[in-house]
Length: 141
Image (tube, rainbow, N blue to C red; front, side, top):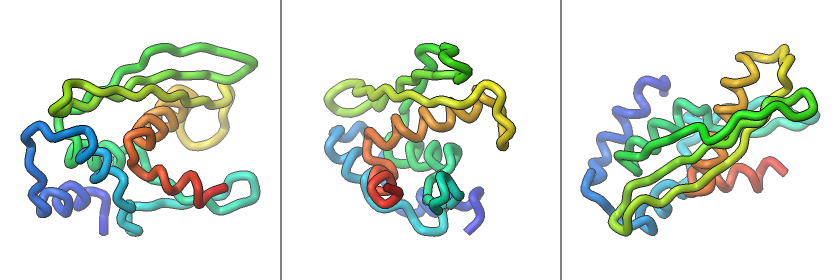
């Protein structure tokens, strides 16, 4: 299924937009990501699976409507750009947040630039702290 159809597919499941408990939101975000939404790449000589940042956003939009996100800090340490982000989820209990880091070599020669790659990593890690694709970290060890 093409990426632009993810939101359509998720919308067809009709999850309510009323504030729900954080437990319900985490339970939904912890469901396995549809295999067609997973990507893979070689890292450290091993094939790993991951969810792209823009797909993570669509899952958050669906299961945690009203979520917000902010970059808390950007630092340069030993030739790496280090970014800390905060992901906030509105729920019946109030606003719950998780923070995560992302890093990238400042002189990256991979796809994207150091800041967008670090931000993508940080967003996916913060999302995983709410359950989204968390199981993939165990599979990729």
